[in-house]
Image (cartoon, rainbow, N blue to C red):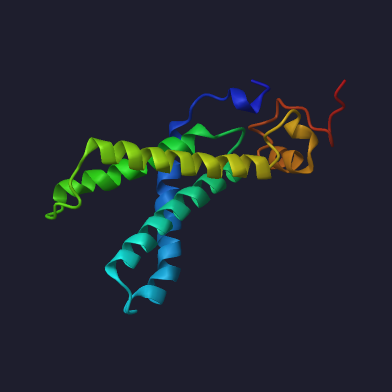
Length: 165
């Protein structure tokens, strides 16, 4: 497996993405919550803020997985985002209001949006680390990634260490 894009799907990175989305959302919510709690705003603003908070957490979580994971990990955070949305809708079984009722269409639309937002974040993370393109190991960021994951990526040639013919 010399190409980082040839890695098998990782359940571990998917579960880590799921936990990371929650952690990022809690971190942003801790900062943003006191700014709008108690302020005279409409209930609709609270829903909009929650939606933006959730989408921002999915993007930033995908970005973090793209930066930190060895090799290309685009699908794992996207699947983790879909599962995150699914879990939110599964909680609706315990909600007494009709607004939060479980509906497959809501799950598919919401999960699809979450999937795409996390995929975009992961793609930007991979691009930031120089892991996308024709020769990912020839960029400075590609060398940084190789240094971060030296054991994992030891089969890849490194420009600063190995001469590639």
